[in-house]
Image (tube, rainbow, N blue to C red; front, side, top):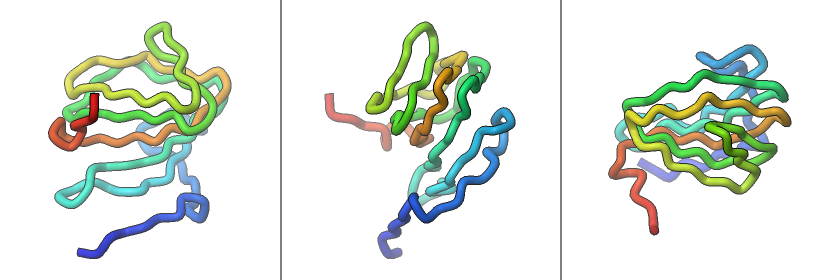
Length: 113
């Protein structure tokens, strides 16, 4: 397999499945044996989502705007690691936000501490 490059500026925003109306996404990787699922999510101002958990570790990198969760505000530049099975949220964004989200196995989420 060859390396894959995606210019996200050229990718089109589409309605994000499983999210409230107005939430858009750019799917960068659908996930599988080669790479984890990766998407850029764009949340409109006033967006909200209930608390939930996943079967995989979830990584968030706030690219624009801010995300609010569990009494904290996460501005652009914030990186979060949410381990699998850990309930997180509820989420909201008063300003709107663009967040890079990666769902991966714990081994793939190994980070430098």
